[in-house]
Amino acid sequence: MTIRKVLVANRGEIALRIARACAELGIESVAVAAPDDRGALHARSARETVAIGDYLDADELLRAARETGADAIHPGYGFLAESPGFAAAVQAAGLIWVGPPPEALRLGGDKLEAKRIALGAGVPVVPTGEPEEIGFPLVVKAAAGGGGRGMRVVTAPEELGEALAAARREARAAFGDDTVFCERFVARPRHVEIQLLGDLHGAVVSLGERECSVQRRHQKVLEESPSPALDPALRAELAAAAVAFGRAIGYASAGTAEFMLAGREFFLLELNGRIQVEHGVTELVTGVDLVQAQLRIAGGEPLWAVPTELSGHAIEARLYAEDPRTFLPQTGRVERLRLPRGIRVDAGVEQGDEVGLRYDPLIAKLLVHGRSRAEALERLEHALAETEVGGVVTNLPFLRWLAGHPALHAGETTTAFLDDYPPLSAPPPPPLEDAWSAAWRLNLPAAEQRPPPDIDVAAQEGPASDGSSALTAPMPGTVISVLVAPGQQVEAREPVCVLEAMKMETPILSPYAARVAAVHVAEGDGVARGALLVELEESG
Image (cartoon, one colour):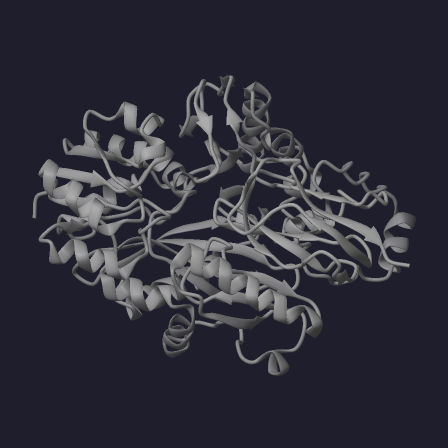
């Protein structure tokens, strides 16, 4: 099969990335743009752009492919990238699907089915079951998707009902499927993933790992390769497990097997049947262009010789329009944008562009490569110091703080990093280098094992913690649920309403036991940051 023209069924930096790979292979590409996105960078940069009603409308995307004479569709990530129904519809229309087969997407995307298959292939998984069987803390997860959507950590039985309801709402909005399940919570693991490539002839190989433990809102903000936690033996074990699972579901194209790592024990979390946001990290240490590989595999090429050794060290930091402490998404016009030179930058916006509510607030990915991890970290710090953004609040201060953090430099990060080191907090003092201090440290009690904080919830404790009666929106968003009425009594930390932005839910909590004096919003309302939501009065 020869691919001549690809419809890029996505937006932002990944749409630009796919178009670039197509051009390098001599393939034409077509961009698509929703009504509120026609002035976006990916749309105005393309040689050919087609207006569609919505990025999630499969019929509209197929129409655009037919009208432009495209013979293939690349879905990027997000939106319909992991939809087996969309993949099947593309193939039924006589088009080439640049991604894994629909059945592999179905098997890998259903987390419960994936766990069953993994066990059959000898791949360890985290135990699942009923809450009373697993115990607390546990994690509620969406069966149909990933990316942190439809995921809630539950520390006590009384939190379970609201967590299940919120996870179902979020999963339904993000994936069209509100099936959720409960899984054992593993305290302070690492998050390590294996990059897979598979062809349409049954071959599956590993291209090494990425360390992705630093996360906020259950989503990654910094990734690196190789992982400082792996030695050659453990790396080989993880790679073998990932390849075994890929073969078990008949995987093809680029995909990522995500693992939870605790010491030398690891568990398969999920398989992402798409190109990953952080794919550039692997590209820098292997020299393999993963998007070009997807196109070649979709065209029927068998797997070629891929490198088995990683060259140097690569790190990616994600620059987002979001609050650097709470990580709540922000909106506004990018009035100034200065991105670093001398490194790889995958940007989705330019100076003058608007960051809105409907789409992911990613501004750019900054990727550095060095001969060693220390050199890569030094280059990352320099790149972040050179970066400037004006007009919209970003996580740049957080990234600068993170890049210089002693725990990151020591390679000691886990998924609980932001629990142990709150964003922008003072770094811990360096340990005293004498025998007495070492002995005293050994006698200190072990740190309490707590789940990572729910940043969404923690961010809401401020608005009324000073005794004020006003609960305000910590971010722009849409009110998707109003849970109280005037005159109603609420308990401390009880949710009063739920906001949604970028398909992520944020519950607004009462800071103390109180009576609801007034409700100023209704379901479906759009609100700006600082908008008055609910007024409370202290109960006597």
